[in-house]
Length: 364
Ligand SMILES: *Cc1c(COP(=O)(O)O)cnc(C)c1O
Image: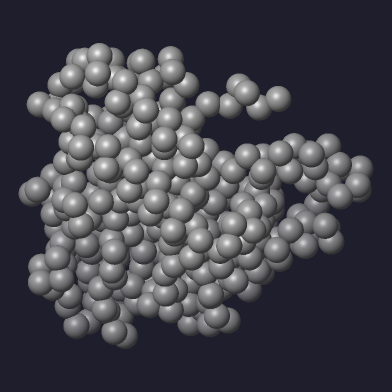
């Protein structure tokens, strides 16, 4: 019945766990026998409140989030957070320390600068973002309003394996492409946000985990919808939230719990990435441009030797024909990229490795 599902390496919106899609399909016309779809019920109904509660509690449990933090389900994508974060957290007269590691932090910088000054505490732009800053290269100021970073650079394929110590200064992280892929210490952060469409569910909902006291920095004259405090106070029900997305997050987080939580998922992700990087390193036709220590376990960026763009094009086309989808690198960097988020099965990675071996026999 599911034979027509192929190996999906899309960077986002991305593959979802098959058991989750099946469950959603099962319940699609009538949620728990209530005779209505989740798409058709009030966001203030008991049924939906239960779903919202479940999504929040599952995230809280998986990430060990204590009650100093609120978990919000917002709209506007991760991109709106580039503006909401500085609107709410900036402090007049202070600047923001930003760790410049790729296109998503560049986009964030552009928005933050509309609100307050940004200081680059480190940048690897000169090296085309093929690595992350080292500890020595980061210079944090003592009185920044907050420190801003992106934990996993979806486009360049780098991922932080450690997080800078920022002391009393809140650390803000865009975790859109690696949230729930590994254990993290939420208490090290003032705010974490993630668009759902990579590791959490469908597009249209953004998860924000915010230390509640930080929401009080915001000017009360900010538009009501753009204040975190509004959504904290109303438990993400100030207006109609993205109900279907929240429902899917509840199912995806339940699936992660059933797999054994973040420890198990992290192990699974390490295994998958190791299989793929091993092939890239061993197969003379391919190479990985990113510095080894900084390689992402979520977005595996690779190239054909000598950056042979013709052959890369062929690779993508033939892969597509062989049932392997989404392998083209981001339009800004070219090359190849396999996004192997939580829901990507090891069997898909193995299928990709087999295809690479076959391709290199024919063209290598
Ligand atoms: C995809 C992505 C975004 C953009 O998300 P939208 O929901 O499209 O705004 C931002 N940051 C990172 C790290 C991403 O991977």
